Image (cartoon, rainbow, N blue to C red; front, side, top):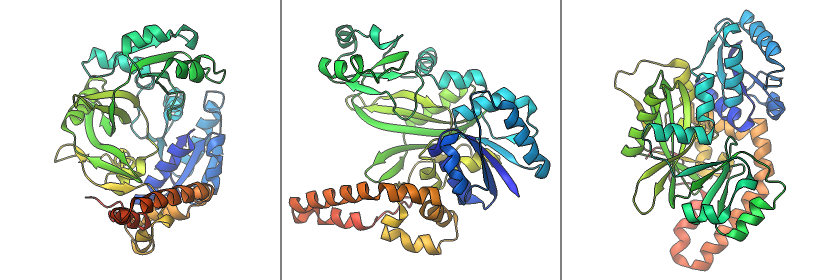
Length: 390
């Protein structure tokens, strides 16, 4: 029996949603996506996978497929995982006879999925963002003028690419000419130019219902793990963003803490689920489950402000093996799904040689530094935190 339809074009994001689902339920899922998600038909997390064009030509087929599933299982819930899926569902929403997890309307999605429109939204509502300029094409970029206005380094990025695609931190005129101006492969446009914030990355993920913040998690990346922290300023900015944008759905916002002032700047927003979704699941906040259940909050906003999730594959962490086998709770289910699901295992095997070289490189480097580094070497063999909340 099918309980959930997960829709999405991006394999990493769709896979993260499937893993989050498996961590709290054994319910069956169907995936509707692009060729990139076709490999998920071999996943134990996916009962069946349908490949469709998500840009409009298969909208009728999508509606028919959903209707056929609903006819057999009327209680099924549809989960749009990424921006392509949200656009598709918005186009045909009136024809869908089932419950859909919270998603923004098309105008709101387009605003938060466009780096220039996001910048304009933030400046209108007094949310801190780096100084930014719109550029129609790379041929319109003037290095000397940009360096005079923003200083060096500065950032150049496309308006609507994901996963850091096309993002360049320009540190010199020679770098600018090589990486952008004279690179035929750099054919993005339009672009934005942004002041570089020298500091640390910090991200916030959240679920909002009708402009009201319901759940959030603030995270930072560390070697081999994602760490969740408390940050009052970013938490307040998140609530303000939700209210000002009347936001409905999940979002992941990239931010940066200025090293000199400590001030937080919002860099860009991703109005969808995100690839590191399972990190918060491991630490106790499952945004997919919250989107499905939407339980009333008697104690205010649900927040994740501590904990750490290891980003290495469970089979590389001996400290996780006992939990992998014996834990019957959400962490055990998540570990087993990550470790033994065929598409995930295939990716792990492909990356194993690179991971091995990184391990040997770190081990050699630590040995050369002497006895003081032996504790760090021991941590490479396991994980003293092992993803548990701290």
